[in-house]
Image (cartoon, rainbow, N blue to C red):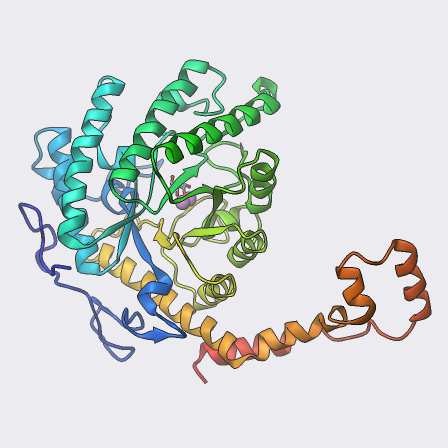
Length: 448
Ligand code: XLS
Ligand code: NI
Ligand code: NI
C-alpha cells in the first residue's frame, strides 16, 4: 500500500498515514488500540476485523438533515465542472482517505460512485467508466471491495419500493440497476453483494397487497442470485435487516424474519445476513442478539458497524464507541468462527456539525479502536474460559443419559413426561449466575 495520494490532487494534505501509537498516545490521529499486525488468538487484528469504509456516508453525505442544508463543504466537489468530474475527484479523495486510514476494504452503492444519467444506458456508462477508475485505484493502493450494492431508494421512481413496487416497469428498471451493480461488483472483485431493503415495505396496508409484494421480492432476489452466479460471482449475498425507516414496516424486519423468508424461498444457501448495530436497536434487539441469531442459523455474513442513540427512534448511524457492545459483538463473531467474506463496514456518518477536516479520520480511528478493544476482550473471554465454561456446564444434563436421548430425538413426549414425574424435586433451582458473569466481563474490560 502506498502512503501517498494516488489521484491528481491531495485532498487531506495535512494528514499522513494513521499509525498505531498505543494507549498512552495523545495524538488524535493515531490508533490507541488497533495494531493491525498484532496477533489476537491465531489471526492478526486486521484479519479478524476486516474494516471497510462506507463510500456513501464518508464521501457523499454532506451533513444535510430534514431541517437544514449541507454543512460539509467537500473539497472534492468544490472545483468540479460536471457531475462526472465531481465523481472522479470524490473517488480520488476516497482512495486517499482509505489508504491513509489503513482500512483494507470499502463498500459502495452504484449511485455513490457514479451519477445517474438521463437514461438507464447513460447511467450504466457513467458507472462502468468510474468502475474502471476504481479498479485502477484498487490496484495502486491495495484497497479491496468488501461488497457492492444498488441504490434503489433515492430516486422518486422508487417511492413505492423497487422489487416490491406495485408497478411492473419500476421493478424491471430496478432489475437493470441491480444487474449493472452486480457486474460492477464482479469487475471490482467484490467479496459480497448486499441487498438492504431500501423501500421494500409499506406505509399503509390499505394500499398494499403484502402477499404479492413479498412473492415479488423473493422472485427478484432469486433472479439476481441466478444472474450473478451465471456471471461467475462466487461471493456471498447479504440481506441487511431493518425494521422500519424509510417505510413504516420493512419486510426484512430483523434477522429471524429474514432467515424465515430466505428459507421459505430456497435462498438460504446463497444468502447470509449483514447485521447493522443501529438496525438491531430499532428492532428492539441487542446488536449481539442479531449476530447470535444469524450465527445460530449458520448465516452470519457481515456487519454494518455503527451505533444508534438509544433514546431516538431512528437510524442515527453514529460511529461505535462502546467497548461493552463491541466486546459482545466480537464474542459472537469469534464463536461463529470469524468472518470469511464479511467484515466490519462503518455504515456511520460524522455529525452535521462535525466540520473539521480531521473529523472523518477521528470518527474512523475511534471506531476501529473500539472494535480492536472489543476483539481483545472477546478473545480474553474465550481464552480464559470461565464464561464459555459456565455455559457449557449449564447444559451438561443434555450430554449423556436421557438428556442426550432427547437431543437425538429418541424420546417421545410420553417418555419425557414419565422421566419428569420420576425426577420430580431433584433439580431446577440452579442459579444462572448472571451477576457473577457480568462482573467477570467488567474485569476483562478494565484489562485486569
Ligand atoms: C440504511 C442502510 C444502508 C445499507 C446499504 O439504513 O444501513 O446504508 O447499509 O444500502
Ligand atoms: Ni447499513
Ligand atoms: Ni442503516
